[in-house]
Structure formats: C-alpha cells, structure tokens
Image (cartoon, rainbow over all chains, first blue to last red; front, side):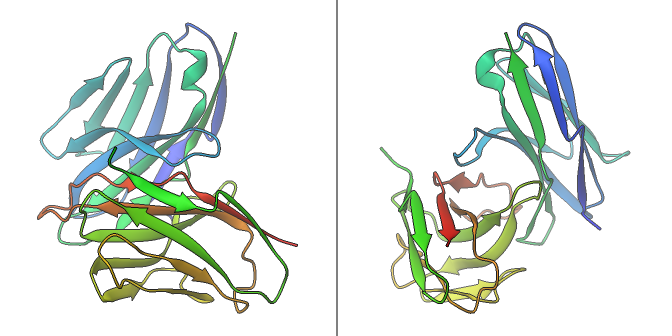
Amino acid sequence: KNQVEQSPQSLIILEGKNCTLQCNYTVSPFSNLRWYKQDTGRGPVSLTIMTFSENTKSNGRYTATLDADTKQSSLHITASQLSDSASYICVVSARGNNRLAFGKGNQVVVIP
Amino acid sequence: DGGITQSPKYLFRKEGQNVTLSCEQNLNHDAMYWYRQDPGQGLRLIYYSQIVNDFQKGDIAEGYSVSREKKESFPLTVTSAQKNPTAFYLCASKQASGENTGELFFGEGSRLTVL
C-alpha cells in the first residue's frame, strides 16, 4: 500500500479560480513533507516544505497546510493561471530514514 | 548556473541493447538519486549514492547499474535485462542533512523508448 495518497487524481479548473489538492500519508515517524510542481516533460521543482511544527506556509499563490495529527496536507492554489497546469507531487520524509515516499501526483489542468 | 544536467533528453533503443544515461551536477551535493517515472505512478527509486564510490539499490534496481566515480557524476546504465525499460528517468541530488529536510534538485529527465 502506498504510504502517500493524493486526491483528486486529476482536475480541470477555469483560469482565475482556486483549487485545493489533498495529500494523506502514513509515513512514521514523520520528519517533513514537500510539495513539488512538475511541468509536463520536465523535472519536479520544490514549492514548499512543511515540518512537524508548521501548520501553514505560503509561496506566492501557493499555500500549503499540514495537520500532523491527522497526517494530512493540502496545497491551495489561488487565482489559478495557465502556467499552473502541471502535476503536483507530495513527498514525505521519515525521521531517521533517508528514503522518501512519493505520491502519484495531482494532475491540474487550467483552461482559459 | 548551478544545477543538474541529464542527457540525452530523448533516447531510442532496440531491444537487447544497453544504454547509459548521463547525470552531472555542479551543486556540490553529496547524495545523488535515480528515479523512474511511469504514467499514473509515483516516482520509484532505482539507485542512490550518498558518497563517492558507494551506492545502494533502491526499490526497482533489477536490470539497472550505476557508478559513482566522481562526486559530480552518477550515470545510469539500463541493461538488456530490464524487462520494461520504456519510461521517463529522473536524476536528482540533495545535500545531506540531519533530519532529511534537504530539497531534492531534479534534472530535466531522459525519456527512453525501446523499439
């Protein structure tokens, strides 16, 4: 069973609208969680990192939240732009372990 | 500019042939990784190296080989033993940190197609 589950698998949104992506994980003991953005045919790029003590963090129009008790994170995209069309990957690190657990990604398509 | 360079971007290979994907980084990172990405699946770890002249198998190492003779370079060879090699391959590097908080820096990927 995958240790990181993302939903929805894909979504289409109108330019200018907001959307929220979900990431649920079972990785334990938890160290940190990163959201990456991957444009089609490119390598992923980190958007934000959440550590155990952080609840929310923003990077421009991207806002990530973390609830370490329920083991859930979300990524909120505000006022979407066409360039936001990409796959958003949730990656979770365990404490004391070099391995990373990857979600399958949320595929976002922004249409004009 | 600092970063990771993968080559070639696109590669076609006949069945039974070995092929080597190049990965070079000038970020002075200790750790380097190779991942495979298939449609609808998360990234899967093939091999990783945390120091020169040392590397470990990941979750799907069968049919692949690597070397780490220099800190900057971590080439991946896809051998004829790999049953389903057509995929998008991503190389990444990271500076080691105590709590594993370091950001993974990815290359632009190499798309391998077996004909």
